[in-house]
Length: 422
Ligand SMILES: *Cc1c(COP(=O)(O)O)cnc(C)c1O
Image (cartoon, rainbow, N blue to C red; front, side, top):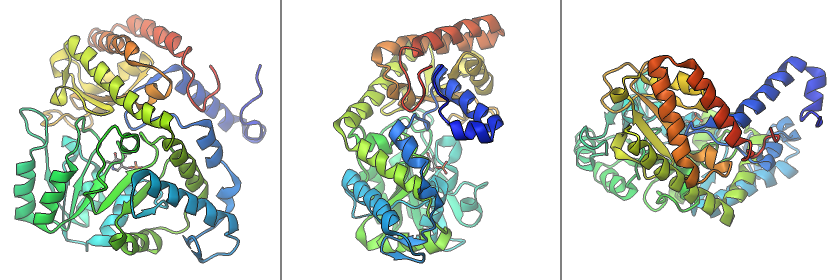
């Protein structure tokens, strides 16, 4: 019997402690394929759970509204320097609480309510905060949206240009949450220049791939780069806004005092550690392995007759259209969950079904790659997915239980970072 990992928590609040333990077990024994998730390292976990939590630090390093910042200033300065070094940017703000508030700060910096903004439509793979109707960004601003081509699931840059020139948006967003293909930042930059728009590259999903050299960087092209820190970048839940020097003041002012109060210093510390890790050669190898695994998994799924949006992937993410298998995305996702494979149901472009009950599932390889699974394991993963989807179609619960046991067996040999060995 090993010691409990949160002894004080166990003593104070056993009910909560048992939920944390159960979550550790769940994350250890399931194949986590949600492309926006990952396993942070033990070092990132430790940094995120420190007494830095106790400190109020409104302002920026050297310019605070509270005293006692001797250490906090250095923590934030470290995170900023590391972000600048890793991504090669002039300026980095590491204070946004998460990706959505980071994007809201961009609106505050560059647009006025009612202005036109342009982004990819949510059901085409964009993000809510790129001006979609149900988001504050789509009700306070006038959102116009582009999509992908029906024939090949790819962005039609000529159509984007045409719309941008017709609408002249203040802000043009590129990037999204369900885009399996490389984003042509240079093409977006030329469109933004013609339309007179501020180009924001929202690389929340692919920041780790960019840091590791496995996806082109938007830095030479975008006015602002927005990213979360907790997806492929493998840090704590948080975000960063990076930009050219000319926009630095506007961005900083928008984050604080425009939108937020005190930064979450414990998160800033975790971000600093994650950025340090991401600057190591092992992270470059990780980023390339994520992409190699996704390509191998896509190939193995195609071999098993699955339809993949855009026919495959260039990055960490695969969008599967299950229409031809006769199983709605939600039914498949729930069956996969019972089989120990965690995915999310997702709309596919031009989905005839509703967003809460769409045709597809979205999967990705960041988490399994963090555990050390390689291309050799991807046929087995594809097989499990195929068997689970077939079992969902037939309502074959015992088949799902068999898969769950096989998944857990394989994963036992690949302990996840940050978790106790199961
Ligand atoms: C995840 C994501 C966000 C939002 O991040 P949260 O931390 O969930 O608020 C914004 N944009 C894109 C493209 C994302 O993938």
